[in-house]
Image (cartoon, rainbow, N blue to C red):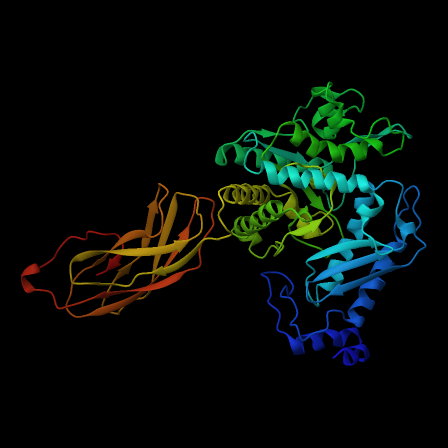
Length: 520
């Protein structure tokens, strides 16, 4: 197998993989099933493609202090685990492994995941530097990660009953140039720094009303002018609002001390978000962002800190219900939501002492995604999904989108009313409407569908009444039922039958209809 793949070229590699395994396909996504054990764990042709892509990204990297981009870089993919490992030379390490370096690694992550997607969706991207991980060179990061991991495990479910919701970025001061700039550049009409507060406000409302918990935010909604920057306070990074609100707690907003690098406040702003969550002993930290990559990259992604199980489960639950809520909207039926959460080392998650996730709502570098990001319909659906994912994870419930399991067939004598049971799974938002439609009705009959609304939360099954009218002879009709909840989430249609027996007794005569739905 290996010798064959070496000589067929990268276009043939996909065919070779397809000959030994039929991978599962995630909805709206690339194949995600690990390759059959008969396949070699490394494929040289795919590795060559990934290494070439890594070198391409390296050519565009803007060097950080202490960093060299002249060294070698290689990338390999383990087809069994779907892990991509990028191995840099040690010289690629900057003096500090803070947020700017994380941004650099993101460029490699996005590019390599996109390059592997036609063959097999990568589960994660790992980084090595002369064969060793980042923590080997920066033991402080390893200490932060270990402390956060232990604290999350010990405190899970025992916090203050609050949530920290962070709107990514905002204006910050460049210390050397002494100017105020945004942390991200505008693309396709979207400036991440100024659109994430809308998402944070949306999510705050749903968490407070549905999850019944207070929400703390690093950034403020105030429209007053921030004197130093000349910008409205709501436009300014959370670090400065936290400095104003918590002057006696510099460990939150000045965690890196008196640094003088131009982007010192940028690094501190990233750190201030989880440190603020720790200060409030929050139950959960949710960091809201938009994403950036090539123009074809699309969809919602969620990142958790590698190795943290509760954060992984939370991230997976959020993806599950963002998919359910967003694709329920007509305009976003085919919107891509990642099939699985992605582990990575991110300061926003690493420093958090509770389950913590980064939610990348969509790619502002993709024109269609950018339009979605500016649409209040998308924003509401996505943030409802985040809240629902959090709430059901908190309740220990698995991913279970709304679906009808079965609808009972009913057989009735003439002029009687029966009960149809609609067995469902999932967690719909009540009121729930049962939409009942006749599909096939005998020519000598009239079949009337309708809607039945259940206002109060009920367990499965839901029921509605159906009636058989006159009974000259036995008649059979075919129906379909759809469940639609108060958020617009709809199940697939399920078919069922109504059989009306006959004939009726002559003395029964004409009777008034007793139900809105039925066959007459």
